[in-house]
Image 1 (cartoon, helix red, strand yellow):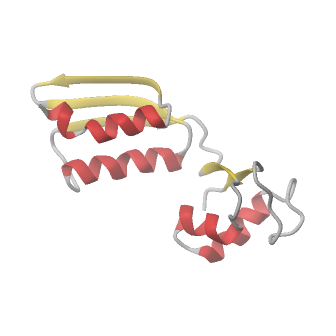
Image 2 (cartoon, helix red, strand yellow):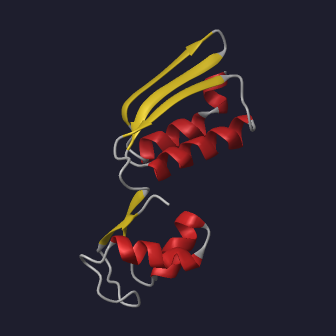
Image 3 (cartoon, one colour):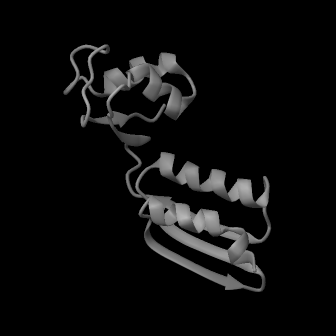
Amino acid sequence: MVKAKYQAVLDLGEKLNIQNGDVSEENGVLKVKGTAATQYEKNLLWDAIKAAGGENPSDIMADITVADESVYARHTVVSGETLGKIAKHYYGDAMKYKDIFAANTDILKNPDLIHPDQELIIPNL
């Protein structure tokens, strides 16, 4: 029963390819465990948990670790994106594009010039 309530969380975990995943149910509490690639993906999972169970759900215990804590996320550029749009997506603030640019000066020479398929580091702020 509780597993069905959090099915969207489990589906997201699959979509994000969470490693070492384990899901069990005990006494009406869903226990979820796994390793997200980045902090951003861990945050997505927590947002999904809160969406399904409220701010402090008592019917789920989640132990999500992060494989790569050196970055907030990794992002592959798609056509039409700008650093500002990417910054808005990850940080909620387009002006943080400067932080993304600074973290990627090894592949970017101009903050106004990015190309599809470039993999950008989204730094921890």
